Image 1 (spheres, helix red, strand yellow):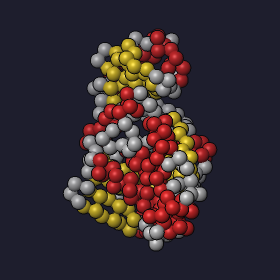
Image 2 (cartoon, protein in one colour):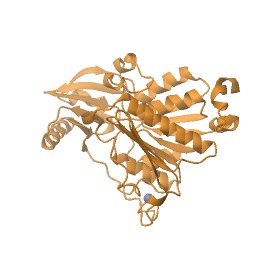
Image 3 (tube, protein in one colour):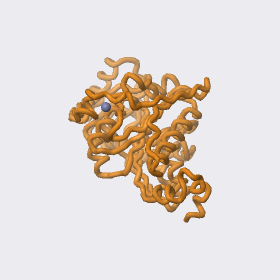
Image 4 (cartoon, protein in one colour):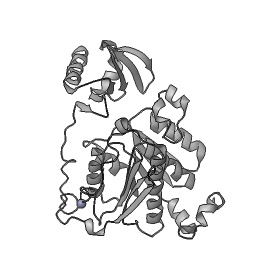
Length: 333
Ligand SMILES: [Zn+2]
């Protein structure tokens, strides 16, 4: 076994001890998009003990330019990213157990999902900013370290957060809101890969006993600007999350039925049996498998998922989203 990982174990800072430690770790990756898939591939190649990946999306053709391991067959088959990732990663390293959770992370379930998986550490591979505050609360409550990563345009940010140091909420003023609007601003694959690489580097430091770098890293892979900021002075003694243990987002036990996403995309939530009752909808199904159905209605395109979520493309304003949601809901009654 050591032979396979010989080259990385020879690096003195990591060593065979680091390698053995990596082999005992259960790492959880939230999101199987650009950052998550690259982190997952690196960790599986390196010989992590076990990996659990959570994601709710299917592979689409416009993911392939920046996301690791997925291919055109996965997109044609509309495979959930976690399933496609699991298949590819098992071919890369059959010694690593990869667990796939095809689930949406929300304030109503994130704490329970992470607690059930019970990982040693959590890696952030999400692609919108708001959910990271939820991860921040859940990981602090469960006393788990986690590694924040974000990439948008040519820019990226990495920050490893432990239970003691400043949390994401403490850094609110310092962290640029990268990652919020990939669909509008685009993202360069090198930005993704550099952020994912630095996330994995933080993980390797931590598990080989060197601790996190205690630096906030920001980069621009097009302008070639790389900056690190020592974070020790950024701990907020009044922080509602890490100083007071007030988990505001986790305690909001409601879910929105309609949510705006990037650009002209909206997320609708219907009951989970909707997937089996599409015949009642006024939509036309173009393509379907056990995980998702691609449909059209008027000028809209939509993807309905097994759990009742629906991504709708082509909505110009919020009022239009509400009208469409209620039209669809009425047809299901
Ligand atoms: Zn804090």
